Amino acid sequence: MLADLNRLLRPRLVVMDGIVAMEGNGPQNGTLRPLNVLLFSTDPVALDAAVCRIVSLDRTLVLPIVYGEETGLGRASGIEYVGDPIESFSAPDFDVNRRRSSTTGGPKWYGRVARRFVVPRPLVVPQKCTECGTCVEVCPVSPKAVAFEDEKRSRPPVHHYDRCIRCYCCQEMCPEGAIELRVPLLGRAIHRD
Image (cartoon, rainbow, N blue to C red; front, side, top):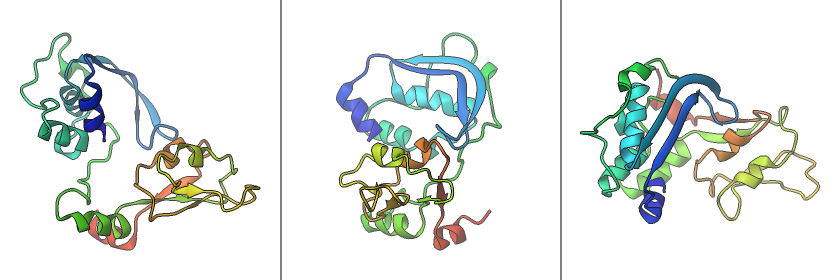
């Protein structure tokens, strides 16, 4: 979606503010970390690849970079850097998911099966939920994948996983940290570390 959006809008300049970055479970529940860097590029794929280099992340793990290169949006190698040496911003211990996605590659049905049995799913923790409705508001699908079961909001919202696209907006934006990601049993078996 990000690659398609950039191909449609064709931005002339892409800016990334990394003065203070966020690592971990962002944006609502992440940890602030100063990186002291501003990045500018006419190529969104190159900019993302530069960030991967800063945080020592294999760029093939970042699907917008992979799809961006495949669709001709930009390039992730042979990048010319201008300004301070990019190594001066290096943060190899940056807290970021460094595992390969279970849903990349394979036949189309594989994605549906993986989403159901392997890919983490958001789950509302009732004891933490204040029924504020932020998760429902930010859910981008229609009909909503997370919704209140009654109009009175007397109980926490519930997820409808058949509609959920696993964007995790609900989990990221929850002001109470009341939505956790749960990995299905098969996913736990595959990703045992």
